[in-house]
Image 1: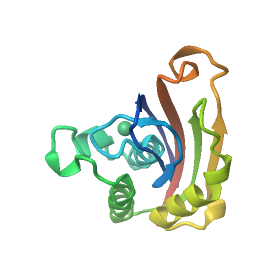
Image 2 (image 1 turned 180 degrees about the vertical axis):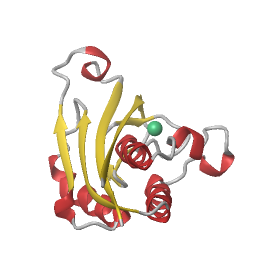
Image 3 (image 1 turned 135 degrees about the vertical axis):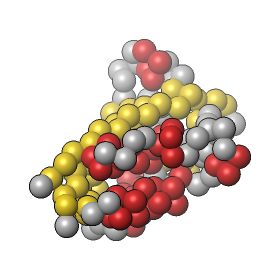
Image 4 (image 1 turned 120 degrees about the vertical axis):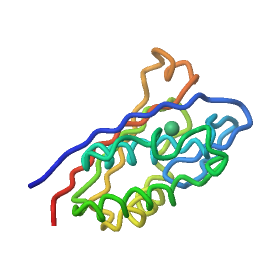
Length: 158
Ligand code: MG
């Protein structure tokens, strides 16, 4: 049996913040606001996995109100989610993602981001895809007010 889950996340853009995607810090004058490192891509991946396994969402698991997650690196939290998915009797098949962002260009960082996510997911890099698109200067992403990420995860029972 295979199961599928989706994830979606948005974080607000602010001057002087770090821009971390898939555990890689991108060089840019502005970054993302959040309780943790605001790694919007990793958050979307976590929600996709939790959705596929029927395990709720990251808001329940890692609440904003919990001081343990202040400025936390999100990649280890993804590792925690993967451990739970495996403990629930599943293995991860693949993950596909899209980052929707006007700037900077994601391309120079793509391989490093994929490698980080693949390591956390215990998958070969070919099973972890990363796509990037802009929002054509429309809406909150288009005005550089936020960055959005989508993810879809497929898991199967072992
Ligand atoms: Mg988030």
